[in-house]
Length: 258
Image 1 (cartoon, rainbow, N blue to C red):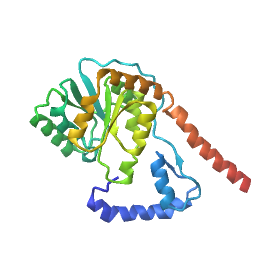
Image 2: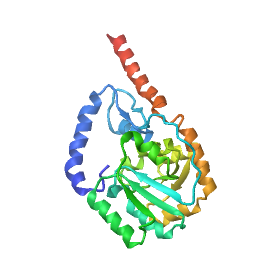
Image 3: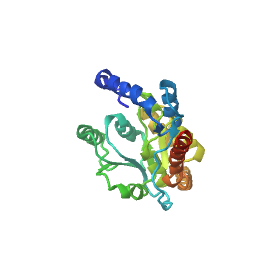
Image 4: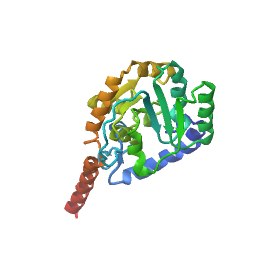
């Protein structure tokens, strides 16, 4: 996750890799959030069982379809840090159609958040870019439902970033939002499968603006409707079966051996 940080690579990564090498072969089961990371683990480690993919999806929460209003509302919620690349989105705003507005909802790196505020102010975006405090956990999805597009575009700096499939991605889906994400393997696969958004090909403000400017209101509304349908299966009520099934398999095999 921190391959952009030279100090982390020098001091922390060897320790973490040592922990992996020591503990992973001893585990009865490893779980991770996507196929890409599972494949990496199976290639790099000697494991007792195939890695079980359990996606980081929320509990089902039925949300209303909301047509796009006068403004097209983009939302980022979650940790606000440099690696999330929100400065690229703000830099894209002078290139966007006038109807786009942005809400950044969350906390994190105070210095970076202040830098984002200064960048927004310097570009004259006070009426287009809003900063909000995080909401309580059980209000994350309903609060997101008031927006139109859920945003998550960051730099591909490591396998963890390349195969990212974060909880906020599925929270956006649960909220009934169109998606704007990187064209990276895991997010792209789900986005295409359910037809729920657009994919950005490069970590660059010009490419971000180009993609957003291409999307029309009727497309956003189609993606939003599709997200509401996708949420009926991309939720913990369905996903928990993967984990429980893996646990039951282990218990059954232990019982046979004993």
